[in-house]
Length: 467
Image (cartoon, rainbow, N blue to C red):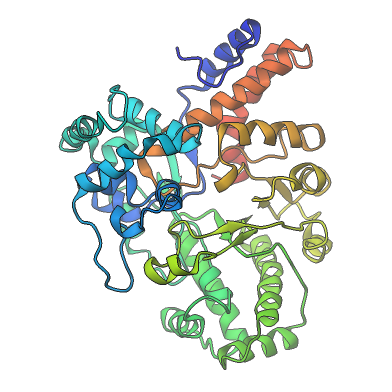
């Protein structure tokens, strides 16, 4: 067995190896991610290595962009009609020729492990071998065993949650349910992500509110009708298997407005007269509203604040959202969450999983909050922090105050389907290494470490996300 990510000190390494063996083959629980459900609903062969591995992965394209390679040359679709590279081998060669840029990054680790463990390609990747690796992967993709559903089974995924807008008709999930893959208790479920109908600064917000009304039959010209429409869509999402909602607000701010004040804000937004402060106030109010709804319908709330979206404005203009143009910012939780926690923080029916891009808050704010409120759990390191070192820092920062059981287990948060097993492997190895140190320092008995790593890898995410 590989000792990847285990300590160099022999005793800790041996303990980590023993602990990792206990969880290496446990099923994968993926309660938060961004894989296109159509991938599994249609079960079509993957097109080619470049469009599978490079084009949708903003971890890769972002690094190449930072060295002056435009996203158009990487095949990322344009929203302006500008020419985009369509030759997959040309796109692949750009990655191979610039492979040195990824030294020491989690992207390199994930890709190398994906090549080896998913595709069985052990050729060392780089400029001289790029074409050979491309050919090996392309040959695998032509085999029936490498179609999406076959890989899903090969990966050992027990449940995969995708993420959809309330405006999604959930037809792809309906197809999965008809095939025995979706719905409550299914292998693929959806997650309710209402940002685009909550955030007044979201492009085309008022038009989206109109579509929400058409989809639900509710009068979204009024605030009361808007709430009814959101409730209707939550019920539809639960029928499609959803056990959680996800909220990607710029901040973690919450506020409790009266229905009359919320209605005035809402109507101002529909008229196109809402300021940036109004938009923030409405987002903050709606987080409290969603907490209230979650107590009623049981959806677990995930809060993913702290990203300045589309900071690279020319990237957004040319290619749209979610292509690597976002930047983390400092995030306050202690004061921002107070209104929500005053209202519902001690209600055991509510479950809120907090994520951050500001790791300074792990020790100072998040661990004490999760250790002090029944409703709060800590989500795994996310996005810019999702790395072997980030995972280690997370355990070091939060365990003393929040313990292991106020955390929610690992979430891979990926659009790159073939990276799912690799990301879970890395997380399990990082936890094995952390627990091995506690055992070696005589701070935790080996049998309890064995129980803990199984909980972190499998049992906790199932419990926390109500799977």
